Amino acid sequence: GYTVIIPPSVSIPQGETSTTMQISVQAGSTLESGKTLSVKLESSANNFSLKLGGGSDAISYAVKKDNQAVSAGDTVLSWTGGEAIPAAATLTMELTESTDDKTAGDYSDTLTFKLSLSATGFTGNHEGFEDGGEVDW
Image 1 (cartoon, rainbow, N blue to C red):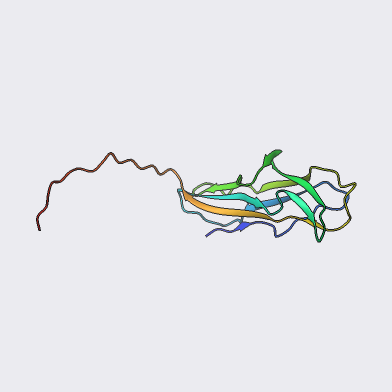
Image 2 (image 1 turned 90 degrees about the vertical axis):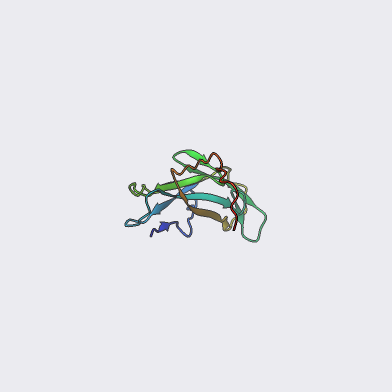
């Protein structure tokens, strides 16, 4: 079996413009050879905006991995059975607009991650059925 560790929450400290989170496969996890485990950033509840609780203000942000933008549906971590457990994926959440004119308060968004397990390296090819003729019973 395997365990994927995704933090339940992260916060951008007041006065800062970014924070990081790590997604990892727990040490000691096992995965059948030929299978690939993928962790995807499935969606953002507020379309990558932090929304003020009970208010209408919002602050846009971007998610990056290795300085590359991550969009909904992108894979952030993958592991193929038979290979070493990969290093943790570090995601950076970075504000993309100023907070100067925003109402004070708690802003939040919910990111959803999707784990999928698939077979790798399998290909099938069939060129048709052989006609065996009629069979009488």
